[in-house]
Amino acid sequence: MSGGAGNPILYLDGVSVVFDGFKALNDLSLIVEAGELRAIIGPNGAGKTTMMDVITGKTRPTAGTVRFREHDLTRLDEAAIATLGIGRKFQKPTMFDALTAFENLELACKAPRGPLACLRWVLSPATRRRIEGVAEEIGLTSRLGDRAGVLSHGQRQWLEIGMLLMQDPELLLVDEPVAGMTDQETEHTADLLRRIAGERSVVVVEHDLEFVRALGCKVTVLCEGAMLSEGSIDHVQNDPRVIEVYLGR
Amino acid sequence: MTPAETPAPERGTARLALRLLLMAAILILAMLPVLNQLPVDSALHVSDFIVSIGGKWITYAVLALAIDLAWGYAGILSLGHGAFFALGGYAMGMHLMRLIGTRGVYGHPVLPDFMVFLGYKELPWYWLGFEYFPYAMLMAMVVPGLLALIIGFLAFRSRITGVYLSIITQAMTYALMLAFFRNDMGFGGNNGFTDFKELLGMPLQTANARAVLYYASLALLLVSLLLCWRIAASKLGRVLVAIRDAESRVRFLGYDVTQHKLFVFVLSAMIAGLAGALYVPQVGIINPGEFSPGNSIEAVIWVAVGGRGSLIGAILGAFSVNALKTWLTTVAPDLWLFALGGLFVAVTLFLPRGLIGLFSREKRA
Ligand SMILES: Nc1ncnc2c1ncn2[C@@H]1O[C@H](COP(=O)(O)OP(=O)(O)OP(=O)(O)O)[C@@H](O)[C@H]1O
Ligand SMILES: [Mg+2]
Image (tube, rainbow over all chains, first blue to last red; front, side):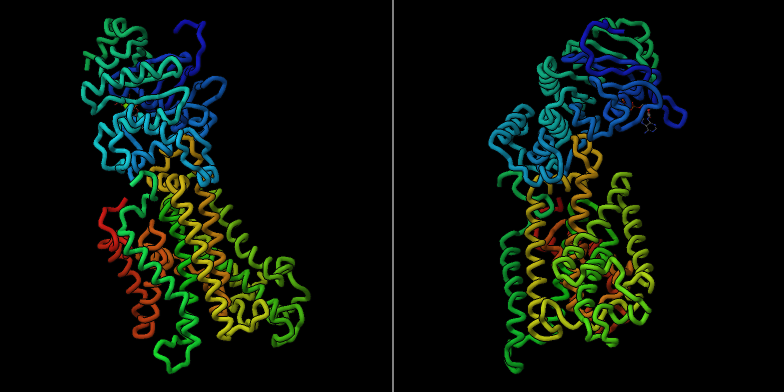
């Protein structure tokens, strides 16, 4: 296990998820420290997305402990977990196609979430500037007035990252952010995530090993729902078990 | 155009043409009772029939608006809004029954005729207070709102959506219809309430009462429209659209979807209840037939025909489908249900954005 002396923000222990007898997660344990940037890699079907589903309340674990700070996530629903400060970007970019990019960012913006609060909501100049700032960061300034549904796949990836930034969560779960991005954009994303980490904790799932290397962080390798190896990118790339899993396919 | 300025479902309509048309429509609607006062031989005279049917359609338009708020924005396809409308109607009916007083056939000062006939000795407790107009109006909102709160809470909390929710609401209105048919419920059984005499000191069935009720309905329509517009233009409106299109994604942003859906569903039921309350004195009767599942479905078709997700479209749909119905039921009454079904299919296939879609060029949001 990782060194125990830190300040864990996310704590998974012995987590299993069974779908119709198939173990998508098998006794998985994982600790993420406050401010840590962590990459998760693993072959298709390893359970990476399922792990995020468990953390965000989409899927209930069959067994095991899932804690965020002192909160037991297995007892909370998606909205409550998000409100605690866990934001997520989905593997397949998901947003609200009928709304503009601006409106998508506005909905994500950290603010009271009740119906009456939303009815009374007034877009303050400060919030507008913040949305415009995020739009600049994600390169969508000129597309703010366009419906999300007409954006390209890469732009949708960016928009969802932007929504994540607007939410201002303590823990960001980012599932395959650079699929569909150009090399330059990929570099920009790595740069962005490195900047966010430190103040925030970030868990990134990615297949692109160049990108993972650029993140320069601890890497966890998942396979068949369990942790196979953990350490620096060089360490895991030279781990015979990891080589076997990746080459054996 | 600045972003975030218009609600998604109405973006892109040819706004100016629509605004002018809307203003003309409101003006014409507002003039009808005045034109009714002109001498009968005047070219501009409007018959009593038009005024009373106009007032009725306006209450239908309010019902359509309520349905569109829930369905067009939040994606809650209720096939039971006729029940909320009917409950509001019954609340008004109870008030009107209490006002009949000794003018009833049995001349009982307190009990309505049907209660005397059924051997009631005193008013059931739930009839108390209905002699007061404000209380009755309050109940016309509170009872539908409460029912929507209970049904909505159970359904939304369990994440029942789509066709399952529609079936539950159909079952609700059907169950209420059966219940109201029973004599021992204390609501007049299958005869319901009728033979109303007066409201707020005005004898009904006079031109004056007709005009007052007509304008009250028009005022309700305008106030409901402004309220719905206000919601649609707010961030709440955008949250509702987001829920309609990707409910689970909204949850991951931290929104309690159940709360938001409950809010619109209850509000929508209360608006429908008020519409029903104004409908009853204009048609002079309320009976359990108003709960029939077909009524709720018909009201949803008004919205689909007019344009789901457009508030003006919903109103337009209520007027045009009812105009068609009034015409068709005089020339070929047997054809009406086929026409209604055909209309629904045709609109779904050829005008997915409804009649209002004819005013806009952009593709549907
Ligand atoms: N709801 C579900 N019902 C049944 N099986 C599921 C469900 N969700 C995931 N699985 C299965 O669980 C396994 C793990 O899936 P998961 O999506 O977590 O993998 P992943 O590591 O994210 O893979 P990828 O790299 O392809 O995204 C897969 O075999 C998948 O088919
Ligand atoms: Mg995945």
